[in-house]
Image (cartoon, rainbow, N blue to C red; front, top):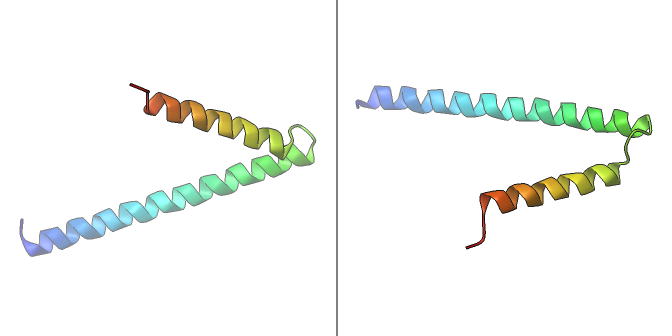
Length: 68
């Protein structure tokens, strides 16, 4: 691969990473807004949501790292 093509490929990769970071930021804002609204309307307590997130994290971690 020539040097110019390599540079173009690297720039495309950097652009894709920037796009992913922007999507991640937008998703984080949406989740935060939803949590604030749910808490404000007394639908769910922040502590309950954090506990549920920890449970899901443990389940996901256990599923991805089974014991031998």
